[in-house]
Structure formats: C-alpha cells, structure tokens
Amino acid sequence: MKNTNNIGLDNKTSQTTALQLNDLLSNYQMFYMNLRGFHWNIKGKKFFELHLKFEELYNDALIKVDEIAERVLTLSATPLHSFKKYLDTSDINSAENVTDGEDAIDNILESLKILLNKERAILAIAAEANDEGTVALMSDYIVQQEKLVWMLSAYRD
Image (tube, rainbow, N blue to C red; front, side, top):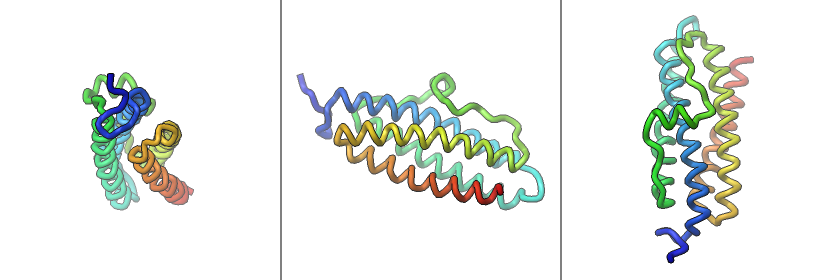
C-alpha cells in the first residue's frame, strides 16, 4: 500500500492536515458571507469608507476560500462544498442585519481571532509533516491578518 500522496507527503498526516483545512474552509465561507452582508447593509457617516473596506475584505476572503479548497485537493482530499457542512462545522456564526460599522468591525475582529487560531494550529501540524506548501499558505495568511487586526483595532479606537 502506498504511504504517500501525489506530492510525496505521508497520507495519514496529509489527511489530518486536510481535515483542519476543511474546518478553516468552513469558517472562511462564513466569514466571507458575513463580510458580504456588512458591505451590503452598512449605514452611517462612515458608509463610504467601510463599504469599500468590506468589499476589499470579502474579495480577499473569496481568494482564500479558493486557495484553501485547492490545498485540500493538493493533499489528495475533498474540500467541503455545501453550506450545510459550513454551518455545521464553522465556529464563526452567521451575522445578520448588521448595519452599524463598529458592530461589523467587532465581528470581523472576533472572526479573525478564530481564523488566526485555526491557522496557527494548521501551521504547526503542517510544519511537523514537512508540508511546506500548507506552511507557506498559513504563514502568509497569519502575517496579513495580524496586520489587519492591528489596523482595524486602530480604526475602532
């Protein structure tokens, strides 16, 4: 029986990483949908700047959703692809009818905490498995999101 996948990584550890990536994928899908709702429903004096920022954030989240799903496939697994699965597995909850900018930013910051914790856990698992592709992906996300947390926190204060 073959012990490695198509990219030469151990099957068992790759499947563990893929499970964690699928969990991250579910959370990103919820994050993406929340960002779309914030973009559509935001009101108030900071409408124009927040409307544009939320669009920037949901476009970035959409790219990450695709990258995560493709990494799952690269690890010879199947990405989750139904909203039922996303709802069942995501730690990020659906945010509905958020119109206040501060509430939206608070939600984004809480969501980023969840995503960062998951990404750091995946980074550790992938590093142990010599899975440089996943390590690089998670490392890039972490650096970008830590800066975003800083910027959103500064904006809110």
